[in-house]
Structure formats: C-alpha cells, structure tokens
Amino acid sequence: MGTGNSTQTNTQNNGQNTRRTNPQPQNRGMYYGGPVLYGGQFTPDSNRHPLANRYPSLTNLQPPRSLYLKPPPQIKNSVTVVNSTNLRKDTLILKTPENNPQLYMIEFQFDSTVDTIVSLYFCATESRNQNGEIIFNSVNKYPVLKREYPSGFKQLFSQKEEEAINFSSLNQQQRNLFFFRQIPNQPHIFPIVIYLEKKSEPKIEQQPLTNQPPQESLKDAPKEKKELLKKNQKKQNKKQNKKQNKKQNKKNGKNNPNTPNTQNNENIQNNENTQNNENTQNNENTQNKLEAQSQVSYVSFNYDQKSQKFDLKILQQKILIKIQMKIQMKIKMKIKIQNENQNQNQNQNQNQNQNQIVDNDLDQSLTVTEKNSNTSKESNNQDNKCVICLTNPRTVTILPCRHTCLCLECAQILRFSDDKCPLCRTKITSLLKISTEKDI
Amino acid sequence: MDPVRRIMKETQRLLSEPSPGISAKPDETNFRYFHVIIEGPYQSPYEGGVFHLELFVPDEYPMVPPKARFLTKIYHPNIDKVGRICLNILKKQWVPTLQIRTLLISIQALLAAPNPEDPLDPQVAKHWKENEPEALKTAREWTLKYAIDN
Image 1 (tube, rainbow over the protein chains, first blue to last red):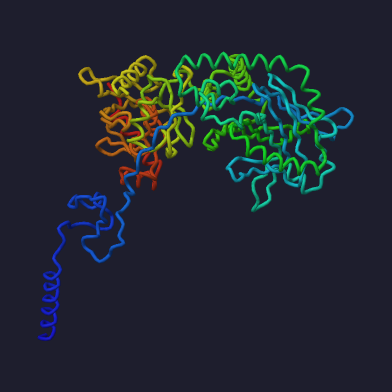
Image 2 (spheres, rainbow over the protein chains, first blue to last red; image 1 turned 90 degrees about the horizontal axis):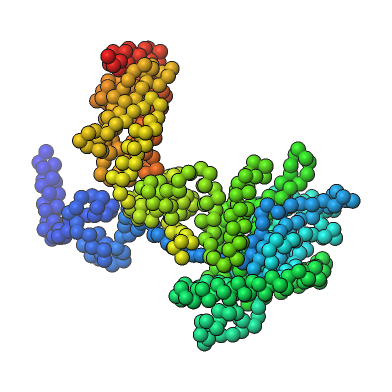
C-alpha cells in the first residue's frame, strides 16, 4: 500500500513540475479541427498554424486551410461568339446510290459567312497539339475528305460515289470502329467528325496588329478580333463594323455561284499517301491560324431496325475559338437528339431560330448557350421567369448542370446560401451570366 | 430579390387556382402565416378527414423551407403527437424552386403513402411495421374521431 501511495504522489509531482516548467500558451482550446469547430476561445490567425503556440519547435507548420469555408462560386460573364460557320443538323443524311445499295454517302448543308474548309474525318480521335489546339487524327489511316468552299448560305456538301463508305469492304476491326465499339485503354474514337474550319488568310497574320490603329485592322481582321475590339470601342464604332461586315458579306455572296464546283474537283484527295502529307500540312496550318474559328460535329451511325437502314446521328457539336492570347475556348453544345421522328417539332423550332439568326446577317453576336436554352425550355416553362423570385427574367446559367433558372440578383443570394442547383440539386461549381441581345 | 413579392405571387395563385383537396389562406394579420386545410387522400385511412395545418413562411424564404405543423391529431408514422412533420423537403432537401403549393402537395402525398422506415413517432412506426392492418384501423378511428368537421 505504502509503495503504491508513494508512486502516485511521485507521478502527481512530476505532472505538476512539468506544468510549471512548460507554461500553457495564451491561446488555449485549439484542437486539430480549427477554431470554429471547437468553440470560440481561439482568435483565428490566418498566418499561424493553431498548434504553433503549443509546439514552437515545429517550424514547418503551415497555416491551416479552412476546409469548411469554401469561397462561394463566382458569377462569370458569358462570352459572345460570332459563329461564322454552322452545320445544319436537320440536313445531315446518309444517302445510298440506286446502283449500289452497299455504299453510303454523307450529305449535309451548311452556312458560312467566310471561306471555309470542310473536312470529314472517319474513325477519328481527338487530341491537342503543342499549342493546345484541338486536332483530329483518323485511326487506321482512313482517308480524310477535305474541300474548300466560299462563303454562302445553304451550301451543299455531298460525298461522291468514289469516296463513299463501303462497309462490306472493311474488315471486322474497321467496322467496329465505325460502330462506336471502343477499344479499351485507347482514346475515344468518333465514327465521323465533320470539321468546318475558317480558311486562314495569311496576309493578315503577317501584319503586326499592335502598330496599326484599331479601325484599320478591323477591315481585314477575322471576326473574333472584331468581336474583341468591338467590346473595347464605343457604340459608334460598332455601327461602322456592322456596315463593313455587311459589305463583306455582299461581296462574298456575289462570288458564290460559279466557284464551288470547280474547287470541289480540285480538292478531292483519295490516296492514303497524300492523306498523310495532308495531315502534317493541316497541323502546320492550324499552328499559324491563331484566330481561326471552327465548328465540329461528332456524328455516329444509327441502325434503324424497322427500315433496316443506317442513319446518322449527331452526338455533339462544338465551337472552337482561338482568341488572340492563344487561349482556346471550348463551348460545348450538348445536343440530345433522340429519334428524329419524336423531336421533329423541336427541330422545326430550332430551324426557325437558326433562320432568324441567319436573317440578321450573322452580324449580331449571339450567345450559344442562350440559343440552346431557349429551344429546350420554351415548351416546358410558359413564363421564363427566375424560379426563385418569380419576377425577373432568367439570365444566369448554373454550371455544370446548365440549368438556366436564375436571375442575377437571386444568383448572388444563392451563391452565398446554398451550393445546390435549385432544379436538380447538383453541386454548383460556377455561375454563368448570359448577356442577351438587349444588354449588348 | 423581393421575398415578399414572391410570397404575394404564390398566395395569389394559391387562392385563384387551388390544388385539389388543398386550401391555404393567409392570416388576416400576418401574410406569412397560412391556415391550411388538407383533405385526406382517396383510398387512405385518412379519407373523408379534414386536416388543419399551420404554415409559417420565414424571413429567409425561399432560401429556407417554410415551417408546417399539423393542428389536427393524426395517427401517422411520420407525424408526431404535436403535429410536427418528418419530410425531407421540409429540411435538407428543400430547394428554392419548391413553393408552398408543392410543399402542401408533398404533405398530401405523405398522407397517402406513409413511410415507417423513416419514422418520427417510433411507437406508431413500430405498430405500422408489425401490424399494418391494425395500424390502418387505428388511423381510421383517429380520423373519424378528430378529423371530421361538424
């Protein structure tokens, strides 16, 4: 018993001694969790780690990152994009010649306000080159179809019989690629990629833009630059630009009717040898074309069991923009196209919208996302009012779910109070303010 | 955003186009306080009953859900003796898209489909799980006793 008591007193003494020798730090009550979680005794100091007082010998302690106080998602402004080329989705069809039903030929219509290069990649993979630009490469060295077109509306692109796809001549592996069956551990392969690219004008690119006054450069500069400059200049200048654009359009339109056929014949390239060269050329070209703008449509085959025929289906359309700063922006247009028959009405709506835009000479800058939202939601929601206040028009899109359901005011409130989309409850990463034509 | 304006709009719509089996009227002195009457859903033990609720719309609405409570006594696994309701959209699952109307429809649906797996009143829920016909019978009795307006 005696020994037991002595040991207890010893330990107690030891404990007291240690306490005396190591005085408690002034700021107490700090545990690992952080000042807010475990009571408010500690005054938070963002420059010091909460345990730095207690363990002064540890110099590596970094101030803690607040895990629970995330910055609210930012509201970003949308960027207006002038789309110089557009593939008409509803006109994309697969044709078979009467003589040979095994051949399939792609045909579609497209609009363009500039000289364009249409390229068809088969079984293509998407990748980025050194400059961060998106390039496509055909798997299995399937020949790339490339044609040049002048500017114009409702231009027809159709494959010729020599270029037609013949499934019977392909081996099993090649056929699999066409039908979207993926090889594991390999990049995604798109059966068909239609690449509408603005033709570059080498003369302009050689001119140093910075030395010139902006108005002069506007005459020749591609539309993206105009778009950027437009924002910087006053409204008066805008009007001048529009006039210039219209003039350009008219000029281009006059040149249209005779040229396309002759150009087509010249530019058809079938041989695999030339195709390789072409690919490298293409890469070089895109490196020079910083301001080039293009639209990409990813297409796949769809087998219709009723008619036992193949059909084409657009999976996605993308607009690629290269702005002066070599920053490449992607605007994805997620288009869910199910059965054409079911969505005929919607397609008609879309066509109408597109036509309206075309009527405006493609001059007015239109926001891509807005175009989408209008088409999909007009039918569902009678009044396009913000779902929270039920009064203001909807101007903010939630990312990543792309629900356009808020006004700017409510978005400001929502981003501090809640991190879920009010429609689908997905976590909000950022908010995108969409500027409508009225705002501009 | 003006929350008062939204409440006014919702009130107008609730009065002009009421949902079937639901009536909600704002208090004369407080536009945030609603007197709600929900009829018991068809083919449920609460059929024929008229259930009174109170609903209060807080200042932070629509960022926070309204508060709702049954005033009429009801035998239901998700509603306790005081009348509090266990419903996800009254708590965490609330999103500002929802409105007073949708909330009341959800409560009506809760009467039609009780959820004893997520109970508020454990005794009722136990009764419900172990002997459902008897529990339904009790619910029916309670309805006849408390929820029939004279």
